Figure 1 (tube, rainbow, N blue to C red):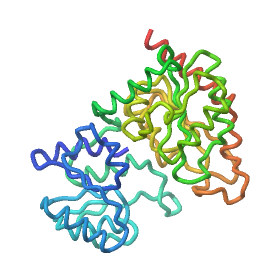
Figure 2 (cartoon, rainbow, N blue to C red):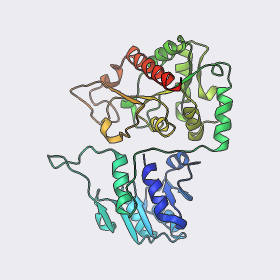
Figure 3 (cartoon, rainbow, N blue to C red):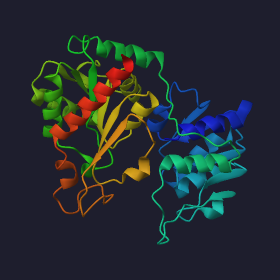
Length: 333
């Protein structure tokens, strides 16, 4: 969601270049994009770690920091690194560390308004002096990841079919999880229409992906870890989504790969408000059941019933998928 802001910040930086500091996973997503010139991977959460990372950053003699994360420690890190201009959202008591503070928008009750993160990132870029960004997400692929995805798609179960990708990941917490049984039933129904189905995952969800594939009990439903030679990476996931006919996913990071590569996507929302992560992808459908208890923004269901996700029926998802696939085929034909 930060790539529109990165695009204009890179233009603003010119020959000075853009250095990205962040967790390894988001930095891996940016590989191949050409939007950054250097990357410093860090998971620093305590003072020694923040100090060590700030020393690494200080070697580049940065003049300005666009703080896309709202955490206090990121602002402290930029200050210790000697960034003369520090621009970010004035939140979590870090306003004193910012030289240019962007104020969160408030609703009519004085609380933080539900504004997409993409919009806040763009506001920060503008406050840095960049031109006004658009909302087009952009990612790239490395030759390595393209080759790895080609190997996956060459599998006999997928090679001669349009491929629908299922992404069951829910790193945010169990509340975002759509039941494995629902994914399996959806996979089987899609396979029965002649589609190939690839179950996407990272290392932590490998067994979940295999379970979904096994329970679907269709030869054209396969799990990524069974085709990737044991290597699972965000780069491979990006490249697989880029080749897909459709992505069906929980509300997790890979849903934005579809926007970046202009692929249709269905996102299954439960406890999270759609407004926080809207990107206005024209080929996206958001599915969420209106419940009096939601969206609660909790990592685990506080009521224990998990109805926000369990009440999304696989037949409903299949119907929407059929419509999106037909629409894509009409545009292509």
